[in-house]
Image 1 (cartoon, rainbow, N blue to C red):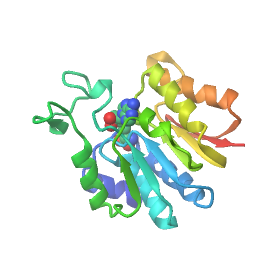
Image 2: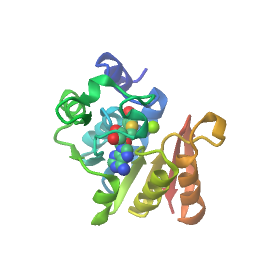
Image 3: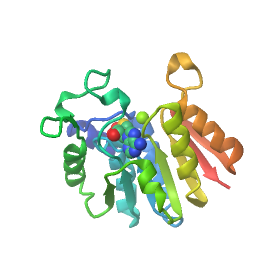
Amino acid sequence: MSVLSKFIFENSIKGFLDDEEGDALHEYALSVAAIGPCLEIGSYCGKSTVYIGEACRQTDNTLYAVDHHRGSEEHQLGEEYHDTALYSQSAQCVDSFPVFRSTLALANLEDTVVPLVASSKLVARHWATPLGFVFVDGGHSPENSMADCMLWSGQLAQGGIFAVHDLFEFPEDGGQGPFLGFQRVLQDCGFEKIAQVKSLGFLRKI
Ligand code: SAH
Ligand code: MG
């Protein structure tokens, strides 16, 4: 188990990412420091953020962590992945931001990660900085996944890396949204496939 996976385990950082996938995110994020900053869509409690953010900390790079912190469809009250500990009684909705924020402090990433508490679409509206690395793990509906893949793959600098989580080729294994978005970027947007670790795929902008 890597040092980062051990940190995640020992601090019970919640999330939806396999250790090997996290280590792959860390490796590829390390490799882009000379190309541009990193950005993730879908931080939740900060599990992926720790892997990518630590790579940025080590290379004096920056991670922009985009999440409205209101949860995806499956996190809402009564849904399969609802977590009562992340439900704000005062706001009467999911709020993962307080936990995300404590993860950043715990991991010593407050001078490396810029939390952007807003929807992916809003952050994209005036985005103009060429990116070195993009990780897409936000809303998983076909519409959301396709929109995120098209919006954010277009923001990568040449040589930049585009990663998408929850790629399932067959419907019986999981939702098709991320897979369809990933395939579209690979086919139409000038990228080559460089790796796949479990359900996490990596492309490089040619
Ligand atoms: N990467 C995380 C898991 C992300 S879960 C990990 O490693 O554990 C998906 C997250 O995407 C949720 O926190 C949800 O709030 C966020 N999300 C869903 N749709 C979004 C959107 N349109 N804009 C921004 N964030 C979104
Ligand atoms: Mg995921």
